[in-house]
Image (cartoon, rainbow, N blue to C red; front, side, top):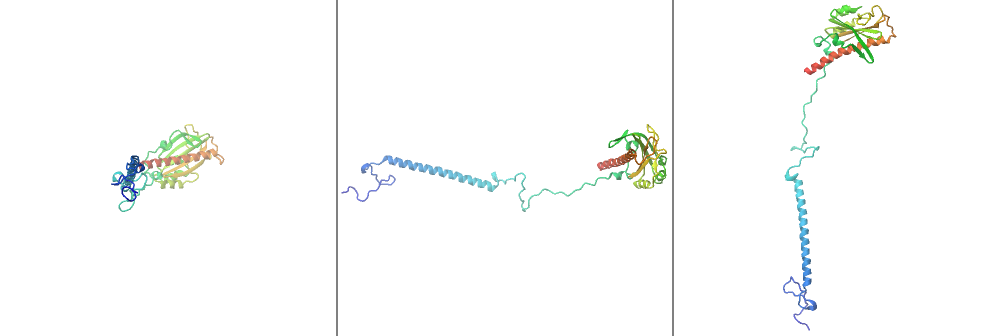
Length: 292
């Protein structure tokens, strides 16, 4: 025997209208504990859904902002500047930017010192025994030579002997400066003949022979030397200057091939004279370069 409405009994659903819940023993009293548990479970699910949805939304927003920053080239939409040391971006035409170019320039060639001592027109620096042979001594390597007497004449032939006077006069020598240096038992007289041009100096040198020498200059502690004894001489020229050396022994003895000290003294004084003339030209070349 059944009571009430026929058919299977439906479970009670609090969210469905007109439904009933069978309580303990099938009575009509609702199960409030079960209802509370179900309500709490539904609340937790809703909170998880909201939290999870909010996190996903935040991530999506961050990704969108980052993509916007990258696509715009930086914050505020301004194009990012290239990093230091990197190449610049291509211009509107697609060509990369390059440093400005300048027309090639070249420095003028240095002035030749020899040009300034090759003619009287350019060789205008002061000239006297003190400028050519300064100081009281001369050092060449480990050899030190004491400076002796000095002479300066406009009559070149009077300070020369052998065939040299004729060569000096033939090519218009204008001045002959002499100085004597001494070391140990050796004395050397250097003579510098001055001409108007390098061509005349070279021609005068070419017109000499073994008997063409300057006269030895004694005095100021240097005894007479090379008056009648055999001595060693050299001849050379540089620019408008022809220079000569006469080296001998102060004891009056002849110079032989074995007298190394005499040969070295003559070579040292010839080298020193060349350097002094070249230094004169170099100083004038430097002054002219600065003036330009």
